[in-house]
Image 1: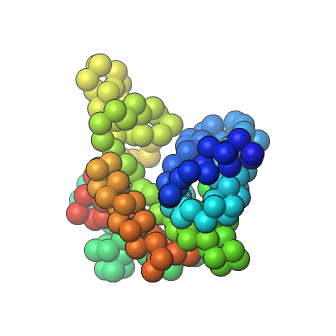
Image 2 (image 1 turned 90 degrees about the horizontal axis):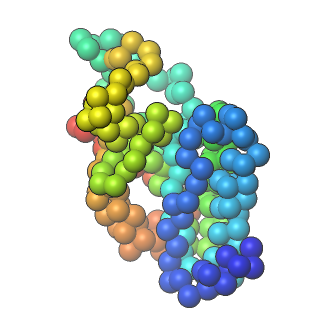
Image 3 (image 1 turned 30 degrees about the horizontal axis):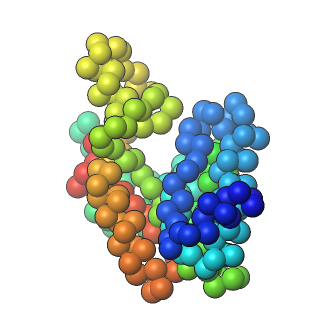
Length: 207
């Protein structure tokens, strides 16, 4: 913690993007997942508390679990929500949290710590709950970064494995748009501190 505090001391703001990112890895080594995602975030928050630097945290849509309360229907070659608001606007932040898998638990607990440090200590913090990000220099694997993984597999002539019936839908967001969202949130951190926002490509950018 002292080394991290020293490294972050000059920082005017902190974008906390570091994480163990794979659900599969969290299942095989939950202790490492806990240390990186939750303890690591706690250390960042403690370092920021010493300087007052704002913190914007990269959380995950996995904090919502499998969303069994959102009914879906089959439409041609894909599934879509019955609810028109969800279908046109996506899942809202008001949906209850439902952590599952060690990854979901570690990121979800970190998510809540980030929000609470705003309430408990007045630290300007905010959370972006990410969907699927893609863009240059992403070297995806089957465990994470699936857009890049699919493209790299196709270009190299490797088979692509799709689990389920192939009608699943995910919205994707280009990394440049994600960066713009982070910068925009930081610019308004005093107005938006203590809040979490879902960040994705939305229904118009779903595949």
